[in-house]
Image (cartoon, rainbow, N blue to C red):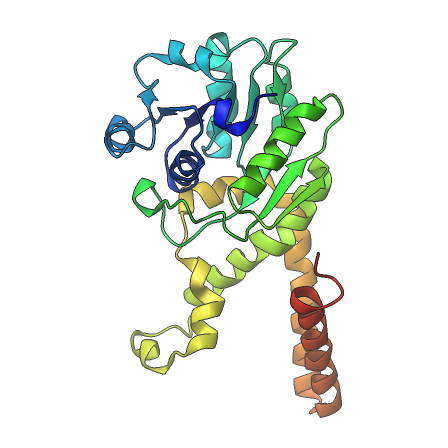
Length: 290
């Protein structure tokens, strides 16, 4: 596999993550970047700003020149895109994605690819509030975790290329997981926090004057409620089994809180909070940090 600087990369979908990929890869002096977006104005903006070198919107034949194709689109659009455009892919292309849910999608994509094409799913754990190309930044990957999905049949040199790319773009860690492990963990670490943030904001307790009584804890807890509803509806529904399991676990924990409060059980409340404090410190500063 070629070095990053010798590689022609196509980025399909120039929104928050796709635009950030274009900007970050440009800063790493990748050989060429072919941009493609369903909104041609966005593509022209990226071209005018110099973050892509050419466009495939109106000429998908240009995709044949790409050694690597990074698909940055909603999960529901990915398989149809591959089905419609695989005829334009280089015969030994490395195809990857950025989706926050995998499910059966990798198997569906495999069924559409030629024998030498290789789909290696990834999930850069990077983002920010808002959406779209205007919010993209080359710094979005700095310090982020990068999940590389381990699947039998993927070429080792392709996994190595993606791992090296992640580090060159500033990711702090690259973790390999199976599809099932990824979807289960993400239901807890990503999906559930979004459910909680949206629920807090949508609570009947939210009133017009609530904003006058908000401090850091509420801002932190609801930050991700500034959400891309179309994208996250896809993610929640495609991962609904694990998400429902995590909601059930959270309900059990809330019942624990309710019981301790009803019984005026100060000791139990303190134990619950001390346990959480220790586990959080271990996660971010202690033995569990890798």
